[in-house]
Amino acid sequence: QVQLVESGGGSVQAGGSLRLSCSASGYTYSTYSTDCMGWFRQAPGKEREGVARIASDGTTNYADSVKGRFTISQDNAKNTLYLQMNSLKPEDTGMYYCATNFPTDSTHFCLGASQGYFRSWGRGTQVTVFL
Image (cartoon, rainbow, N blue to C red; front, side):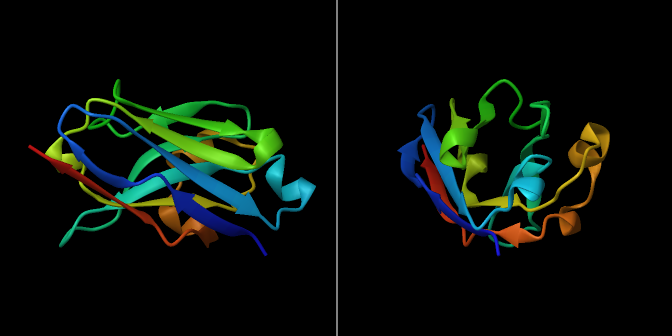
């Protein structure tokens, strides 16, 4: 069973940076080699939304609100997913979740599928951006 643990959240002034990490365990190779991974966030009173995704071939996509400021990456040797967040804004505040265990050979499917295809979720790490 895949387990995910996020870390790196915190409180930061607007314009600052944070780097989130998501450590994964319990993978089988067949799942990991084709896994689609992503970061999502949920602000108080709002629905959870996608922030960034990375397909098994390394292709990435981002929500329009974070393009040019956030970067998703992964370290396969460490089974770790990252989200580098720069130029943070108060509207970036929320609980950030990583999600994986969505094996697919289709990059297009990975980057466009609904959140329900991700079968493993972490508990989240809080990000608060203040003025």
